[in-house]
Amino acid sequence: MKFKGFTLDPFQEQSIKSVDKNNSVVVSAPTGSGKTLIADYIISKYVKKGVRVIYTAPIKALSNQKYKEFCTDFGKDNIGLLTGDIVINSGAPILIMTTEIYRNMAISNDPTVDNVSYVVFDEIHFINDYERGYVWEESIIFSKSHVRFLCLSATIPNAQEFANWIMEIKEHQVDVVMNKKRNVPLKRYFYTNTAGISDIEKVKQVMQTPRRKKKIKNPYHVHLVREIKDKLPCLFFNFSRRKCQESALELSKKKIFKYNPEIKKIVRHKLSLVAPEIKRLKSTKLLRKTLAYGVAFHHAGLLPVIKELVEDLFSRGLINVLYTTETFAVGVNMPAKTVCFESLRKFDGRSFRLLNSKEYFQIAGRAGRRGIDKVGYTIVMVDRRDFNYHKYKKITDKDMDPIKSQFRLGVNTVLNLIDQHAKPEIDIILGMNFHNYQEYGKDFKKRKGVAYLRFHNITKKLKRLGYVKDDKLTKKGKFASQIYSEEILTGEIFATDFYKPFNEYQLLLILASIVYEPRKRTKLYKKYKSKELSELQLACNELDKKKFRSLYQITALIRPCYLGKSLFDILDNTNLLEGDVIRFFRQILDRIGQILNATSDQELIDKMYNCQHMVHKCVEEVDAL
Image 1 (cartoon, rainbow, N blue to C red):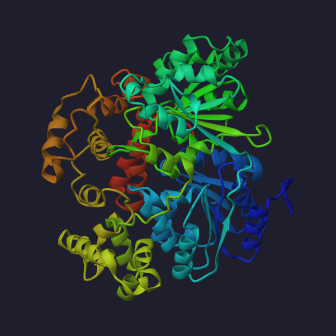
Image 2 (cartoon, rainbow, N blue to C red; image 1 turned 180 degrees about the horizontal axis):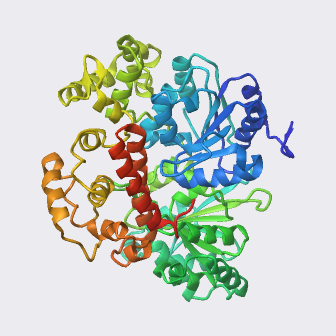
Image 3 (cartoon, rainbow, N blue to C red; image 1 turned 180 degrees about the vertical axis):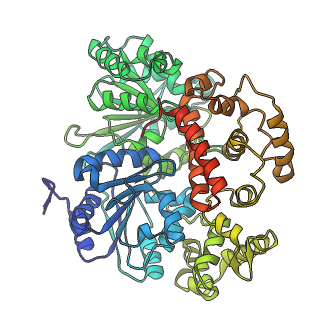
C-alpha cells in the first residue's frame, strides 16, 4: 500500500486498516519510524468529508511544529492552532492543540468537539508524567462516545493493557499495533576517560578497579566530540540550559571545526529581519560566536526566532554539534547521526534522579537519520558519582517501563462533573480511571477507589465556599469550572467583587503572582513601591498570604509592561532568560483568556481586555509561534 508517495511499512498498513474499520489504535513504534504518517492518513480521509480531526501534543513546541507542517501539507485554511495563549483559525476542520486544551474542551462539553472523528494523542506515554499525566486519562474518559483515538508512542510495553482499558470505558474496538524494529539500527555506547567509547561491561571493569577508582576523572565533552568527528552531526543533550551555552562556547573556542562563512551570512540575514535589540542580547551574541564554527545551543530560554534560526541551520546540515535540553527530543523532529548524553542524571522539578528507560529511549531515538545513516549512535558520558552498573544497564538496554496511571482528581474536574452529570453518572465516571483498572483489573468499574473519596472531600469544600449549592454549581462555581488552575483562588478574586477596586496594573500583579514561580537564582533588580502596591498587598494577604508573597518582587516585571515598555526593557531588569520571561507573560495571557471565557461581567471583561492589550504590546516584537 502507498500513501503520500511512500510504500507503507507493515505496521503503518495495519494501523490504517484499523482506522478504515473506525477502530481506535494504539501504535507503539520507535522514534523516526513514521508513526505520524498514520495521523496524516486520518486527516486526509476526514478533511474531505468535512469531519473534524484533533491533533494533540504534550508541549507547545510540538504543537507549533505540527501547525507549520500541516499548513504546508493540507493548506493553511484547513488548519487551526489552540495553545491557551494562541488561537488561530479555531473553526478549522483540523485543529492542533496541547492535550490540556483538548481535555478542557472534552470535560466541559465544548461544541468544538461535537463533530470530531479522531483525536490523535502524540507521545501518549506522557500519561506517565507525575504532574500532568492525569490530563491524558481525563481526555480519554470525557471524550464523546463517537470519538476514536490514535495513540502514538515510541514504546509502550503494556500497550495491550492500556488498549483494554480504553475498550472497557469507551465500548468500542481498540487495536494494538507494535513495531519494535528501528529503520536505522541503534548502537549504544558509554564514554569514560580511561575506557574511551566502549560498552557498559568495559566501563564496569574500569569503575571496579580499586587502584583506579579514586583517580578516575569525569569525562570532558570536548574530548568526546573529538572522538566522534566521523559520526556527526551530533545532538548533545544536557539537562542544564546554562551548561548547554557554556559547552557550546567551550567547544567553539577549541576550533575543532573550520570557520564557516556560509553560516555567518545566513545568520546576518536572519537577524537583519528582527528587532535590533535581539542582536544585543547576551544569548544572541554568544550564539553568533559559536555558530561560525558549526556549534550551537537550543533550549526553552531562547527567543522563538533564535530557536528557529538554530533549527533552520541544523536542518540544512550546517551544524556539527548542537547542545540542547530534552525538550528538543519531543518538540523538534530533527534526528542526527549521533546522540550524546552529558549525564543520565537530571533534576525533575522535585529532586535529582537518573532518567528512566522511557526518557532515555525518547532522546536516544533521535540518533540515526532514515535514508542517510546505516546506523545511529548513542553515547553516555559516565559520571563516576552516579555510575551504577545495574541501573545504567536497565535504563539503556531496553525500554521496559510500563505506562502507569498518575490520576488525581482536581477541583476543575469535580466542578465539571457536578455541572455536566447527574449523581449516578458521576459515580460511574469516578471508577473509570486507568488507576482503578490497573489496581482492580476487569472488576474496576465496581470499585469506587480513591477518586470517590476525593470527590466528596472536594465537594464539601466547594459547598462551604459557595461554589456548589443543592448539588448544582452557583454562579461562582460556573465561573470556576472554566478555570483550569488555582480555580478557587481565581474564583474568589474574579467571580466576586474583590477585583473591583483595583486598576489594570494591580490586576496584572494579581495574575502575575498566580503564575509566578519564585526560584533562588532569579534576580529582579529595580522594584517599584507605590500606594497601589500597598493597598493590593493588604487585600491579597487576606486571601492567601503565601501565594502573594512575591507581589513586590514582580513589580520589576509588571510595572514596565504596564507603562508600555518593551520586553527588552524588562530583560534589563532581571537575570531571567528571555524565553522564560516570554513564558511568564504567555501564562498571564492564558489566565486572562480563561477569565474572559468564564465571565459575563462587562466591567471585568473590559479590564481583562485592557490587560491583554498591555501584555501583547510588551511582547509583540519578539513573540511568535
